[in-house]
Amino acid sequence: MTVGLILPALGLGLLGWLMPKLWSMVLPEGIPALFANAILSALALTALTGLFFVISYWSAGVTLGRLADQGITGNIAHFGRLGSSAAIIWAPMMCIALMGLPRTWTRATW
Image 1: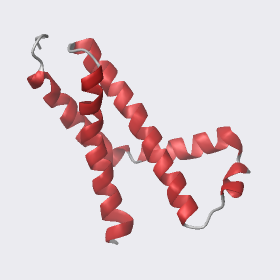
Image 2: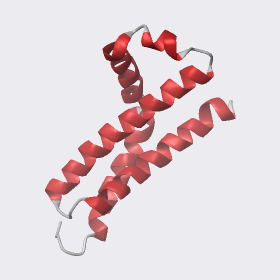
Image 3: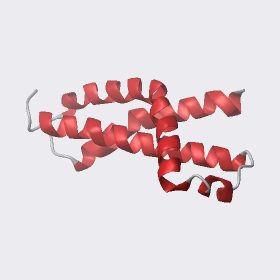
Image 4: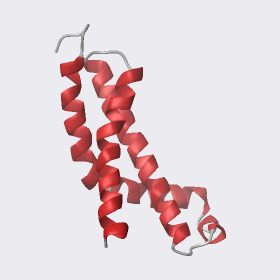
């Protein structure tokens, strides 16, 4: 149970907290950049979570040829849906990290 459920959930939570902080190093300070950070973080986390599910399927014995039978659009739809459903784990941590970013601003005011 620990390896199959708790560790991946902790990893997703950590990624949800870390992703906005990484984007804040690249994006400027300010409200528009904060909204861009939220969108970019959500897209990146959905993609990373989808990739995690691809690796999980592969490690469980599903061959890549079997995954290729669905086609690219079928795989993107399926794993994108799985990645966005995992937002129940990473989205709260991402929101908390985003709310804390304005405290570190030195040039822009809230």
